[in-house]
Image (tube, rainbow, N blue to C red; front, side, top):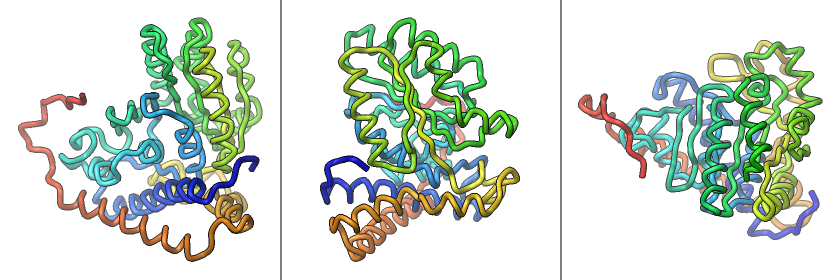
Length: 325
């Protein structure tokens, strides 16, 4: 973890990851209680990617994600109560209860959505970057997606156009090794050659340890500065690992990996790695982490209370669009 060690800075990163972790754990609990309907894809284990990457951005940069979007939305600074209310389908949610878990949008934070179609949002990221370049703005667009999106045609079209037009977009592949909708043999192969996919289009690419929030932020700071200054797309493969199944529809370890494998990867839990770093550098103590647990616990509890007490959308709103200014 090569970076300047600052206590306040590191505790802030830890708190953001902890918020995502506890929010997701409570979301799973609420899903089991039938408070959340539909599908629910948790981000547990991958927190370092969203927190590290988004920490390198400006407020006016764009962020866009796929259906495992709670972590990105929270890392971008969205109000937890509004996020939870959206999961509950309530009128006080980010999208007035009409988007749900897979379609979070917070335009004020420049979080331009989660999208349920695998790979379907990559062309949208390219479009956002095109708009910034067309207007001669020095904004960057960051697009998060899983490795399962790479076999889709629209992903390759997005890469091709981004390279052809030298657009200020950073593609971040959260490679958790098991691309849904992709045969396991192909998914494992993707784990070793993802950056070559981007390079084949002339896009600069590199890998980063997606379990290390400091490593992710360090790479992103450099890449964002490069893209902002010179333009042109960039591709980052963040090697990460989710500890839960693909969604709440499958077991914790799924049908495609063993419990032992998951437990082995838990030894590199992003929260654990950062905590160990801070303790080893005498930048924090156990009391600090206990206090953060209490603070974050209170925030998550308040988000659930807000969601539960909020009303559902009125039937008359069924045919009304969600207007987001």
